[in-house]
Amino acid sequence: MLSDSALHPGIQLILLLLIVISYYIALWNKDWLLLCAVLVGYSLLIILSFFEGSVIITFGFLFADLLGRAKSKFHIGLGIAGVACLFILFLWKEQLHGLDFSVLVAFMIIQLALPILRYFLLKTSNLQTKLNEVNKQLVQQEERQRIARDLHDTIGHTLTIIKLKTELASKLVGTEQAKVKRELDDILATTRTAMKQVSELVTDMKFISLESELERSEQVLKSAGINVQSNHDCRQPLSNVEETMISLCVREATTNILRHSQAKCCEIYTEFKDKVFYVHIKDDGIGLEIKRFGNGLVSIKERMHSLQGDVLVKEGSSGGTIITITLPIHS
Image 1 (cartoon, rainbow, N blue to C red):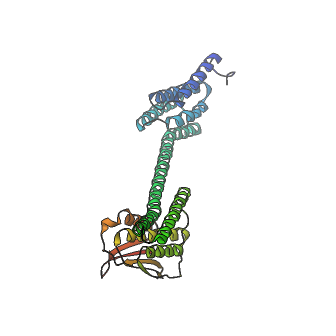
Image 2 (cartoon, rainbow, N blue to C red):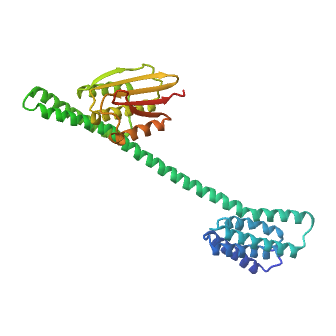
């Protein structure tokens, strides 16, 4: 190009250097500097194309792509309008016809459309980045809520047992030393269990067998002087996650009975019917008082709703409270 050009080689080098400088300025800015650099760069390319041939115009793709990075639609629109005017000026000056004219116009149209395409691609990318950030925050929030529920359900349940056994031991002091020692040993064992549960919760939520949790709940209720009747359906078509969630719901319901119900009898039974798994927990305590459930009922509902299940809490026909946990089985 330098040897056969109508321009002096020195002028060619100056024009090329100015084009490179314009490209560099446009590359590192997104405001008016970008707009000015793009228009200057296009102008220099058109000047060069007057002497070197219309093929030089195709290098305008470099500036068209950068124009799409402008910070606002106004800058992009103004830049496209300026570039279009420069293109029209070039076509008027060159007076091209036939195939050359058609090809050049096609290239110009593509260059005018490129900033718009680039803008929407960047906008989509930014929206996706923001969406990923929001999803990350939601996951973190759900994890915090899960940890809070697990601490409330697991540690709260264990501390309730410690409280009951401590009260029982204090009543037996001075009368039945053997029973006091046995209760204190149980308190020590339960405390160790609580420490182990904290460690397990920090690591991850472990799998909890529903069968073992039902047996454990019965033992805890019986140790508190509550008569327990149970009947469990051996058919349990539950996944590990579903079984763990239902087990924690049973634990929370049992904890509420121990803390608040003042019940003497409790019935716990499960059944699988019409592709729905049920857990029924009934006590003969003081009845339904929403305030006494606190975070417990909210926790149970959140767990079941996360599995597309449900929880129904109502008064018993002869007093007390009935909690029915339902979980549709889709598999």
